[in-house]
Amino acid sequence: MQSELFASENMAQPATAAGMVQQNSKSIKYAVNGECFARQGSMVAFRGNLQFEKQGQGVGNFLKRSVTGEGLALMAVRGQGEAWFAHEAANAFIVDFGPGDSLTVNGRNVLCYDSSLSYEIKMVKGAGMTGGGLFNCLFTGQGRLGVICEGSPIVIPVSPQSPVFVDTDAIVGWSAQLQASLNRSQSLGSMIRGGSGEAVQLKLEGEGFVVVRPSELQPTPASN
Image (cartoon, rainbow, N blue to C red; front, side, top):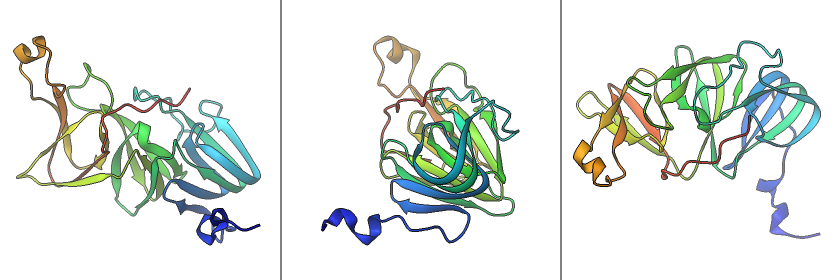
């Protein structure tokens, strides 16, 4: 049987080491030898002896009840085998954490991560009156994190002389050392008259970078 479908770049190869690797631009393959964590419902295929457990079923401190408002639900993946993770054909990326590295990521953009990483939920200063992007996951430790982005990401440098303002629906993540707060760019009078659609942004100050997606549309949340 002949087809470009069977091109070498599309063929899954046996893993040579435990951990995550890029399968293609839309998916991540994880060779599990013990345990990892992933977005609930993101497994598209697996082989081997693996078990998938919903959060809250005694799977340890790394699985916390999400309060992000973005509908993130996590699962533990245990055993020996290979699993492929993806979400709605969004672009997938792997972030390597070295000693002392940390990254703040919007919960809706988390795909999978090593059990050697930990996270805590952080709330943006002044949040409480608007939607996505205001409760985020601060990842620390050493290991790998798989993230997704709807469309090609835009990485914007942030400097003390040049803070960056991002739509809260477009934020993917940012350097953990940045100071994040809410910014109002629209007067009350303008809001009463219908508004510009750009009333509140996330203001990021300091030295680092911010990652945004080229869309303000909210993705469909994962089911809990």
